[in-house]
Image (cartoon, rainbow, N blue to C red; front, side, top):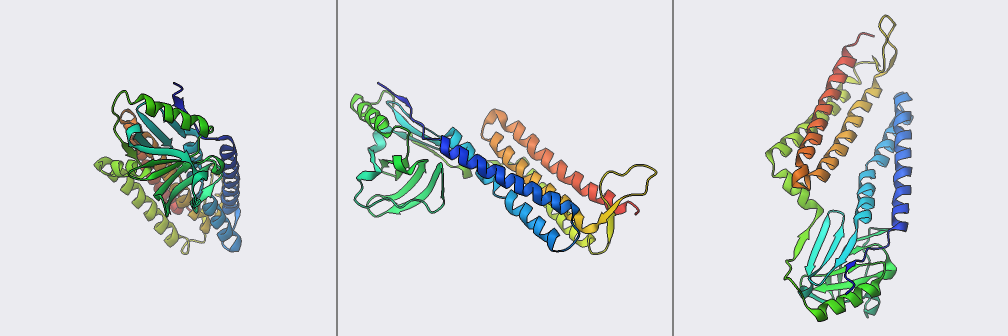
Length: 302
């Protein structure tokens, strides 16, 4: 029997997400570069706004691209495993009531409001099916997987092959009773938060960044100019407007967010959790170094 992997179509979605990530990264870099050269005023505020606005969605699109790249539907004689990034749903074949095309519905499916090319994800309610969860990539290849708990909507590259394989597997019967399993991305955060060390590292990095923001905001109005950048011994320090000090807490916060996400990635596996703590600890130390850097900058005579 042809059991195995029936992945969703990925090419269009990965191209779309790659383009979005590159555009947002270019705009964020341009915003922060302009920020380092601008004085206080409309250009400075606009550069800060552009940099932050373009950077904040990047982790979201990176995760969506990673989730699509890893997405798969695996069917054997015991279960159907749906994997989409950190979201995992393992359904015993005995729990599946039917698998059929979404085109067979008399009332069409309402798609999730936030849907992107290569990522049709989210929950909707259907008048006949009840709660429906989308884990799909292509609206033209939607299949309904009905269970007693809810209906899942998937989109294998070859829907007919998956449906036929499911029918044959059902006829042959299960070899080993499988257990139902549901894993959500939020589970990793909840599990990590239960660790005292993880909570300490997260909260310390958070308070260091908040303190750095508050301190820089209080310093900027009191000091007109600061020495920012590489200073050579014996030369007169090159100074810039003190408003550019805001760059340091912004960069510190963005790097801390990136480190937090990277740590969560490693924390999913028991053997890799040491790496997660190393990443979170490094983020905390990095935030402390940014705080010390501001201290040296404001104490340097100009």
